[in-house]
Image 1 (cartoon, rainbow, N blue to C red):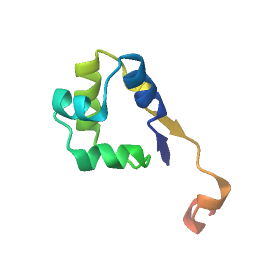
Image 2 (cartoon, rainbow, N blue to C red):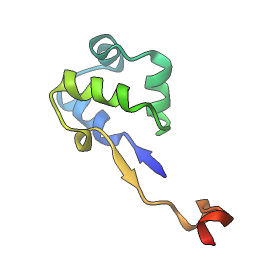
Image 3 (tube, rainbow, N blue to C red):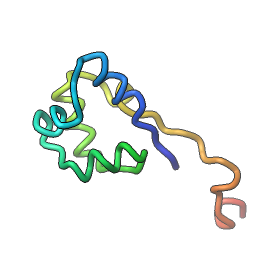
Image 4 (cartoon, helix red, strand yellow):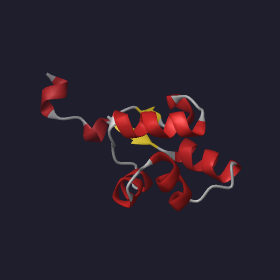
Length: 78
């Protein structure tokens, strides 16, 4: 499963918010923010805190992307 946080970063632009601002507001570490910048999975607890502080829903900050055929394992094919 892949995720994209492009929606979060667009929302931050719309709110004129820097990554540092979100870290302070939602209590998110800079390393977690870096993970989100690389579209890596972060905990649901972090996503929940962000959504609460930005007063938005989970679908406003992330998108779950379908797996590409190349990323499927042999276990997925069986």
